[in-house]
Structures are given as structure tokens and as C-alpha cells.
Length: 208
Image (cartoon, rainbow, N blue to C red; front, side, top):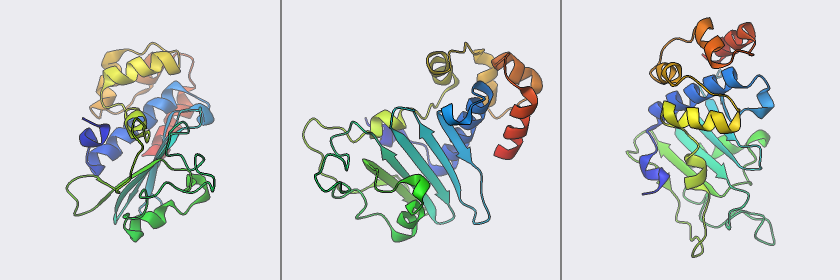
């Protein structure tokens, strides 16, 4: 079973990404080093979640009134645009994406042309959609790898944080955050004793 098959529906995915972004804020004071980020709704009711592993791979999830679109880029994938001589997007990735959602990728920060897979859901879709892409035998488009870094459980995040942030997090507190508990000063201190609690609280407030 691929990670696409177990990807949550957009509303649950948004909450998952906000939780991950909040935990990254607590664990990592340097914004540019964070793995998971979330930019709350702007005036147009669009919010953006992102993943950046610092090794050239990234994922953007754009939540909009008309639906949700996910663009991923695995720089080692055999369907990377850099594999083709003309540096073109691999055939089939974008052709079937509804124009109203594809237009959301027209932002320099999102680097639309750097893509190895794209998923989307319009509001009436019951499952995630993906274009007809012919992937060479034995090749990967990076979707399992990158979607697998949307950690669904507190246990998975604790294991990740130990390796990535070199922090040993109390599982019970992380689990409470996953369940939607309000994040207190005491929780922040317990998760990252060296963190700047006031700065973290300010950033969490901006996260919504």
C-alpha cells in the first residue's frame, strides 16, 4: 500500500501539519532549519504547509477554498525534471490537475517546475487524485518517501525528533499536543529546556 492510500482527507491533513509545525517551532528556534512549517490562512483563505529536509527535497500542501493540492520534489527521483535534457516536468504530472488548483502553484517560492509528483482533491473528491504518469520500471517519484515524513502519530514524531533535532521528547506531552491540547509554558520547557519560551509562544499564536 502506498502512502497516498493512507493520506488523511484535507481537513485532518491540515490539522496534522499544524501540529507538526507547532512541534518544530518548539524544537528548533532557527526557522530555516525546521522540517515542517505552516503559513496560516491569508486574506484569500489559502494556507500553505511545507516540508523541507534540508537535502534538496521538499513538499508543499496548499489548502484553498476550491480544494487542496500537494506538490512534491525528490531530487534523487528518476522522474525529476533535471533528468530530462530540456529540464521539463515529467509528462503526466500536471496535465490532469484542475486549472483552479494548478494556478495555486504559480509562486516563485513554490518552484512549480521542481516536481516529481502532484496530488490534489477538489471539494467533491472522495479520494486523492494523481495524474497518469508513466514511471520507469524500478523508479520512484518520491511520494512514499516524502508523504512518509508527515508523521501521523506522536511516537513517530518523537523518533524523528531524536534523530533530526537531537532532542529526547517526553512522549506523553507530544501525544497531548497531537490530541489537540493547548500548549503551555510548562509543556514547552519540558520539550525543549533550552528554548526561548516567550518567542515560542508568540510564534505559536501566529500559527493559530
